[in-house]
Structure formats: structure tokens, C-alpha cells
Amino acid sequence: MSTDTLADFEQIEFSAHGRTAPVYRLGSGPAVVVMSEIPGITPAVADFARRVAAIGCTAVVPHLFGTDGKGLSAGAIPVLSQVSTLARAIVPACISREFTVLATGRTSPIVTWLRALAAAEHDRCGGPGVGAVGMCFTGGFALAMATDDRLLAPVLSQPSLPFPITASRRAAIDISPDDLAKVKTRCAAGDLTVIGLRFAGDNTCPPQRFAWLSEQLGDAFVAVELPDSSANPDSFIPNHSVLTECLVDEPGQPTRAALDDVLELFRSRLLTD
Image (cartoon, rainbow, N blue to C red):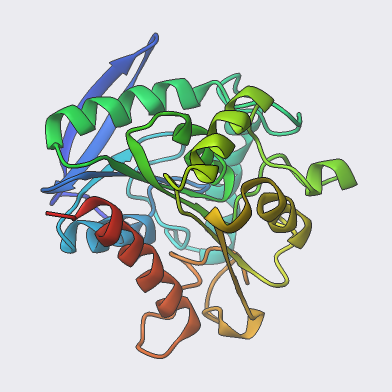
């Protein structure tokens, strides 16, 4: 499917800290903030949000970049359209002051807005807390949001910032030292389980990043590293988007097992009544 009207989602405008943007909601129950990968809220991202809603949570999908509902294959010439769609999303995101793409030891400014969104959705939806999923460009945001005690279930799917162009950037993630210290304290206290997902050969989310996360977070970090051969062979970007474009949604498939692990984290931490 090249486009998704998102007609089954409720659309609102959320304002906080000087930023106003559309937010799409689906379902009922405790909130899970689903942060899209580049190029935006694609049909595959929307389908992941639907899976979250189907287990009894409220999927909360904020607009961060790109054209909402547009898929990678939309257009008369699919390959050219895919490249164009990616470029139209990634270039503005890379130059936006909302995102920290190269620097180490910094939390992206947009995380402040995302924390406010998570807090507002927790107040609205109730439950013990909130979940969050970041993908690729937004992968580390889920970890930085966990400075808030209401965030109980962070998932980092192929976290790709900072861009891994040097050794120091490969063994790091986009979070400030102060924010990391707060998250580490929560992990040490047993308050958090952090799931990380990546394909073994994904150079945008290198193995050094997961090794560093394991060193920092200890047993609270659950690394799920999948063989490249388990990715959907029809994906435009091979061996990258575990929960969306590279998902093989069939029982027994490694990517499906990874998806089930993520949904089980939300069940165990958020659906406790």
C-alpha cells in the first residue's frame, strides 16, 4: 500500500513548549507514543500503531516530519519516488534545530515536547504509565523520554542518532549526560526494561551502539539483534526497519518474534489491571 488515509485515527493538534503539531490517536487504554522513522508516518508505521492499539493500548502517533500517510512506494516510478520521499523528509530534519543528528552527549530539543505529549496522554488515558517506541531517526528519543517516571516501557528500534560517522558516535546515542544518569538510576532500581532492536548488518545502528547501551544500562537493556537474512527481501532499505518495512509478519519469523516481544513489554508494563 503506497498511501494510508489514517481515517481510523483521531487527529488532534497538540501544543507545548512553543511547538504545535498533529497527533494521531487510535484505541483505548494506556498510551504508547509511536515515533515514526524517516520519512514519516508511513502505512507500515500506521500498521504498527494499529498492532499496539489491538492489544488494548492507545497508540499516539505524533507528526515529526514528512507527509503523513505517504508510503515509500508512492508515485509513478517507485524507486525515484522512494528516494524523493526519503530526501524530502531527511534533509529538513537534519537541518532542523529540533533534532541533534551529529553531536554526542546531547538530547534532541524535540524530546521536551514529546515528554509533554506523553504526560498529557497519561493524564487522559490513565493506567500505570506510558510506553514509547522510537524508530531509526527517533530511536534514541524513547530512551531520553524515560527521565520521566511515567515512561515505563521504552523501545529503541534501530536507533540511528548520532549518525555513526566516527568511532565515538558509533558507541553513543543521542542523550545528554544528565538525562542518561536519570535513566541509569531508574534502570538500576528495576523501574525500566529497555528493548533495543537492530539487524546484525545495519551500519546506521552499529553493534558498538548496543554494546555501549548494555554497558550503560546493564541488565535493564534487552538487545534483540536479528540476522540480516530475516529481513523482508522486498524492503527498499534492506536490514533496517525491524518493526515496519523489514517486518515479515508470519509466525515463526524472527522479525515477527521481535514485534511480539515489543507488544509483550507493553502488556506486562502497562496492562497490569
